Image 1 (cartoon, rainbow, N blue to C red):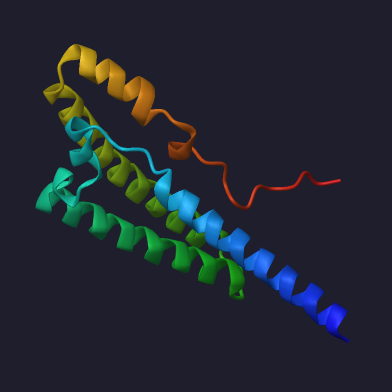
Image 2: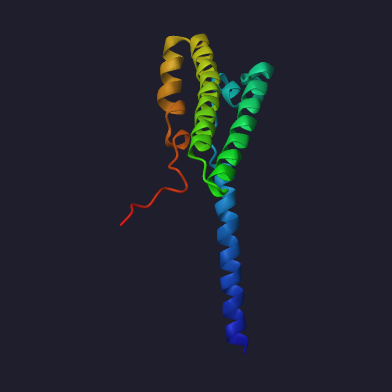
Length: 141
């Protein structure tokens, strides 16, 4: 009876230590961002007006997605309504992207050429900025 309990206790301890180590290493291995680029991750980088604009568009995008879902699942099926909702969603995405692109351009304009090159080569185009979609479609067979 003692042997299985010892094994169970050891396995439980090992799992806990693994999980604690996993979270601690993630916290400790965060890359230090150079002070010149740290403003990019701060809310002040967006500014009040840009932040409000982005939040407004994000809210509209969420609403549009919900409306599309509702239109897709209700009867009778209205193809024209769904197309209109999808067009509205595309427009809102485009407006939000335009704000982000202008922010990136304004930020890049303020950097000297060498720092701009360093930032966009090393910091901006990392894989973490372009993750794979979580719900990738499986091919139909």
